[in-house]
Image (cartoon, rainbow, N blue to C red; front, side, top):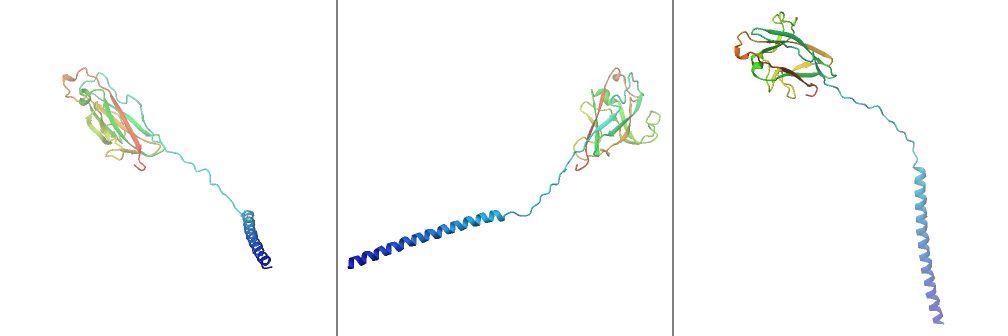
Length: 211
């Protein structure tokens, strides 16, 4: 009889343990189920009022620096020169770009001997740019000095980047007239007979903004 009671008691404890495990599993299943429902609920309740806006046409363009000169060649030329001869002519320098610019002028010649003997003078503000009117008025920017050299002579300003002494400034779509005169001094000796030289007047321009 005692053996039957013990077996009954053990079986009861075993069944209670099984029931306890089952209950825990049921509780865990319920938690997972509720978590899934919460996730689904969050996904359904995540919709909110919203709006977007686009600001377009943010366009940019760059300006231009464009120096030009007229005439483009042979502004001052004279053949068969004799001591005392001179030639005078205007040269128009224009800012054909959209930005304010500064420019410099350098003269490079094909040789040094006759180029050093010839005297060049450059003026601005001459009312009548001719041999007769050259001395009447205007402001000298260069000379009288050598017409140039094979290595180049800076006649107006300096082509080095940045503002330099003597640089000329022109606003966009403007110009100025340089009156140029070249002469062979009256005291030129016989050693200069039969010589030839040619000069290239080189303009270098750059923006003035932020420079």
